[in-house]
Image (cartoon, rainbow, N blue to C red; front, side):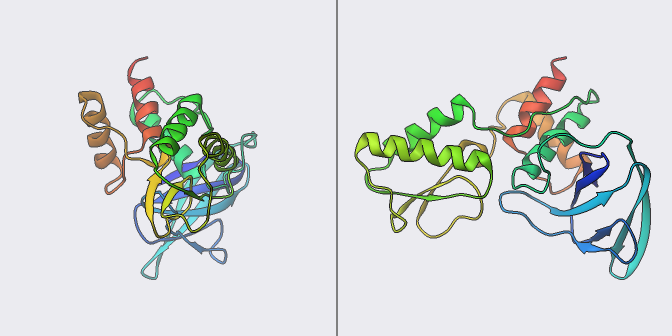
Length: 219
């Protein structure tokens, strides 16, 4: 189980399978699947210093102590759609044995360049699918601007869909760079995949996780 950011306030709890999680026996919620993320996720409010997570599976309950400390989380809202990706980087950093703070997912110049290349490679009109995140909105601006520059209409009914977040709909889906599986062909990437499977069986490697793992291993 992973708890992020492990600070007072809203926390994202990640589990490998079905589970009810809460901060009290009468406040349990189902851990649910999230688009583009493996495992299941639940939002739980934690008080300061010391707290307990209540867990329930198949009618059996247990508690797990947590120590979120006194400093509230001052980063982005973990209730947002980017939070599982951030959590994957936190998990990878922990697995290196040299945990470090991880950046919140944002649209990078490399991401923008890749999106422009995707639009250029699509022969006709372009459709967009995204989520409520700031990154998705900024990425949509990049796609629309590049489509306009190339004279390609952006239409909801287009057969080619640039996926910026959420669940893909019908059509030929072209996922944004952060939604693509990472390249696991290198030896360090394979070490990351093995460590992840050993610590969190069934967890899918992510590009953010591989980046965090590589940075931690190079320290």
